[in-house]
Length: 485
Image 1 (tube, rainbow, N blue to C red):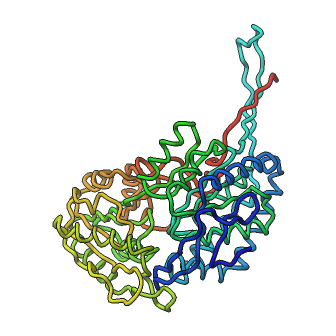
Image 2 (cartoon, rainbow, N blue to C red):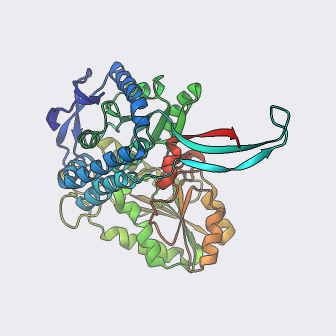
């Protein structure tokens, strides 16, 4: 196995020298080179897909208990190597130490352990009397519903969490008997290769898991349009998801799309403002706002508008921005210089559109790293681009509303619909509003998640659901078997 400084591809159980050479992976906190990632050729990506196809038959026939035992061993290996894995993740992403350990590697290990649980893949269907059977007489028909693996799954993962996001795809896909080709985000692929090492050591057979990386769009295209691929699971921008969907549609490939978000946080006058501020404030701190579930679009009832803006400003101003390895740091860098410029351009756009920059708006005075100060934009009309478009950084917009109907209308006035939030002391109202929000998930007085609940979006936020048992459903096809009783 090559050193991390010059990573190789993982294809068909072999560590392969990339045809396209290597490119630098940069630490967003220090701007130093973390390691050298491999650039796969289209032929190498196709070879990975072919290897997954060859491995699919034997792996799909492996008893579920044996597959589960391998996933459990992989989880144990990740926990045993948590510190070095987290250090690599931190260097690639700029995450704080606590986040890299708990929310990246820790969550990945937990997801492999979760899908090491064997769940029923067959369900008996009550017999039915068929009054006009094919032989011209009544017959009792029995039936069974069976979950079958889809086949070869291409997993294209996001840069914000190179451990938990791939694990959420790979683990349930393998548990159901699929084989996978993983195309990690080009900004931080090295962690995914460490995951592949753990899976190899745990006993996943040759070709069961393949990892191919690269900065060229041709790498992803080859992993999507390969005739050996049956399904594509993608996390990323809506624009890229739309292009993938077009390719998948031509050959009727299954799709699971977790795309962009512009989460509305609807705050009523009777809300616990401290709780609302702490929840909304995670947009500033958690992954430096680079998370699609963030409550970035705050809609607050006019009676507490000024108080909420004041408290959010105070919250943002107290957060320590800087080196994520230093104790007390809450807000690390964004992933790259290009992304920092993108976020800053949105802040400037907000100014031009008429928003008030209450906090932030200036680049932090740090010598190195791609840092963006937590930024609060108030007095935002619902038509502003900063309100309507995903910024993917530590930027929160605030818009007032007068009554429940207006709050719901503003929340639903979006191209997105991943996760919204409601804060109110009136629980009945909070749930009433939640049911009317056009989003795949709604948090009531919390930004917390139940990882067994289905996860996915409405509209431009995606197609399909995963997490918990819903992920097993996503990576399987339902087959019916019928017989005369």
